[in-house]
Each structure stands twice: as C-alpha cells, then as structure tokens.
Image (cartoon, rainbow, N blue to C red; front, top):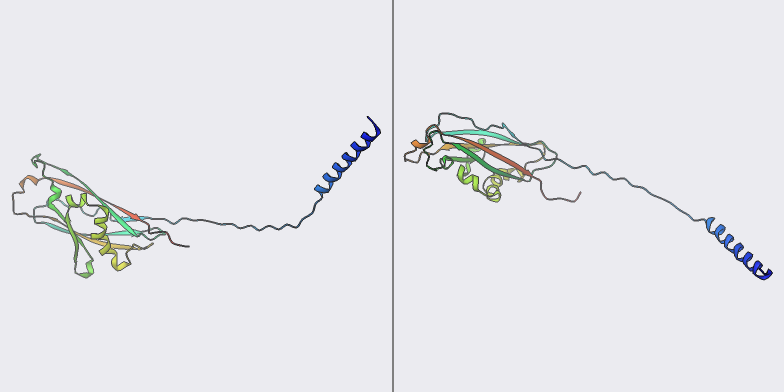
Length: 198
C-alpha cells in the first residue's frame, strides 16, 4: 500500500474516531414529571326485605292480603331504574283446571304509600304482569312510586312498597281451583343512571 493511501486511511479513521467521541459527549438539558391516577368503581346492591313477601294458606275467592316490603340500596351508587320480572308456577291439585291459569284470578294492587291512604297506583293480574315489558312496568309502577324520591333509589336508602293481593271473586264457578297453589317469584333488577362528568 502506498504512503498516500496509508495517510488517507489514517485520516479517515481519525475523523471517524473523533465523530464517535464527540457524539458520545454531547450534553443537553432535561427534566421529567410524573403523575398517578386511581379509578375506583362504585357498587349497585339492591335487596328486598323480607325476601318472602307473602305465604298464605286456605284462600277462597274474594280474600285479599295487604303486604309490604322494602327495596334497599346498600350500594354506593344511586339506582335510577328498577326492572321487575314476574314468574310463577301453578300446582293443579286435582288436575281439572282444563288449561285455565290460576294466575288470571290473582290481582295485584300496587299501593303508593301506607301513610297516604293506600292509593292504588297500578293494578293487574299476575298473568298480565308476567307478560308486561320492562318499560310498561316502569311507567306504571316505578315512576309513580319513585316520583317523590327524585325518580331514583339513592345509595344507602330504602323505600317501602305496599302491595295488595286479591283472589278475585268473579261470580262464576271457581271450584276447579280448590286445593291449587301458586308459587310467585319477583326478580328486581336495579340499573345505574347515565354516566356523568366527574
């Protein structure tokens, strides 16, 4: 290799070395900031008290029963909407109901409040209540009942609902229902309200 090439190669190597050293010692100002966040969800905790609203025997057409129960919001969030699902089964003691539904003969009167004269806010039979949509039930029962409470069941509160059950005397032969029984299940489903800015 000629002297000229050796000198050129040496100069190139020296320039590369200086560039690497210079790049590694470049200084600049710097600053950092850090934040932390926490998200804790609320709870919905709807309870019915007592869990057995009615247990009565020896009914006859024309009998009625007044009962009350509390819906309690033990959660940390307000319940803005309550859905009600009705289900029941009939035990036909003698097998002679001929397909007639005993639930058509049990009328439910939803009463506004025991302190306000037991005004009926809505009434229907169990068979109709079983087929009603959640919106129809909300408009008929819950909106009038919760109206004086701002339309919601606030967190940490409870409200008492008054109900009257009636075995309707229809003036016809109802002998086929002698000895029959009906097991009723109400499922209450509490829903949160719309999201809000926090």
